[in-house]
Every structure is written in structure tokens, then in C-alpha cells.
Image (cartoon, rainbow, N blue to C red; front, side, top):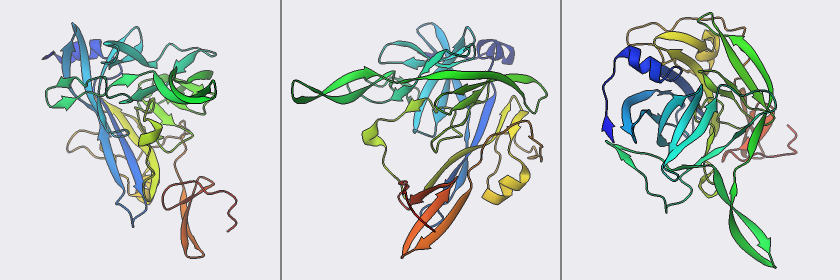
Length: 292
């Protein structure tokens, strides 16, 4: 494996949607547990592996480093478990097509490869499940579930161009180039939403209210941003623009991304968080049948 130097033109040909991509997400916490903050995800460098060029991305949820490349209008992710690429995003999907979830670091039998200072996550498209066979509970390896495309449409982003938008039966939505923008769970802003964590590593964290997308730019051109009022309400800064550039107020009426709304209530000495109509305790566990 080696590091490579390319011109900007070469980079954009190799990575038509990934080159220059910057995404700011906001991780929202209860103040008593941890300060909320904005985090920037972007490619860090280009590497060669098995004769192919990849961009190195550091993710935030789960915390990991991955290798991505593009081919045939798809974003591919390298799996050291298979020593090949898996489909991560597919910009060619049609209504009725399926896309598989992926999972990170599910088996320590597969060694992580190292790129410079980065340890690359092991990515697979299966998980372990417990099933009963002949009266005994055993562990089996099964493929991860797939989500079905229910609708394909277009949307105009802040650069004035139209992009494809996919909706899935899992209530997830992603947009060409932007990646994931919404989800039924708390990781609505994460480009790496398809990379799941094993259930035994999904530890509830005090006061975590979720993550949402603040802004996206590509090569300095803003593609998406929540409006200034929302930024101020959450204290969420857009980090996507180049150093010294202003964070402009933008009108994004053409984009219907839900942003989390939260309310804290104390009842019988217990703190509860109401987020988007659902109630959670301070450990982030959903609580049902609460009457306030």
C-alpha cells in the first residue's frame, strides 16, 4: 500500500462525488452529561491498495477509519475481511431495488490493515445471531438485512443543480453526493449510517440526544445547510467552508430534512427527554406510556 499524489482534476475523475466532500454534523447532548458539538467529516488522503485508489475517511459514528472509492456510479468500501470492495452507496438504484446494511468490527479474527497512522475498520455484510436448533441455543452467521427502495425522485441543492434522492422502506433517505440525511434512529447526519455496530457494543450513553446534519459542501460549494435560526437554536456551527470563509444564511425550503426537537421534563424526581414525539430517560432508553 502506498500514498499517492494527484492533481485536482485526477482526484475529481477518480472520486466524482467524494472528492472535496465536507459534511458537518451536530452531536446533541444533555448539558449535564457532555457539551454538544459540531464535527467535520472529510477525506484525509489518497492511498493505493491492490492497484486501486482509495480516499481515507475517518468516521464519527462508529469511531473508525474506512477506505472508499468510486466505480460505475457507486461508492465502494474496502473490506479486509473479504479483501475486496462492498457496495456502500449506489447512485443507480431504482424503485424496488435493495441495498444491504454493513457492519464494522464484528469479528476479531479478521486483522485490521494499517494505512500510515490509520487502522482501517473491518467491514462485513453479515452478523451473528442466536437461534435454537435441536433444543440448543447456538450462534450462527447470517446476512444483514436489506432495505428496499420505495421511491426515487430529484431535489435541487444550493448549487442550483438537481440530484437524485432515494427513500427506503426503513424510513431512511439519502441524496446523491450528500449521503444519508435522515433516519428512524438518532444518527441522522452520519454519511456512514450503513455501517452498523454489533449489538453488544451499542452501549447507551448518558444524555445522548442524537446527531443531525448541519451542512455539506463539495470543493468549497455549499450543497446543503440548515438555516441560521436552527444553527443558533442548537449552537451548531457549519465547518464545511474553507478557512476564512463566512457561514452564510441560506434558504433551503426545497430540502425537507427533519431536525431534532427536544424538551426536558422532570417528573417524580426523574429527568426525561422528549425528542421528536418520543420520550427517553437520561440513559437514552426510550420510555413508553408516560403522561406529562
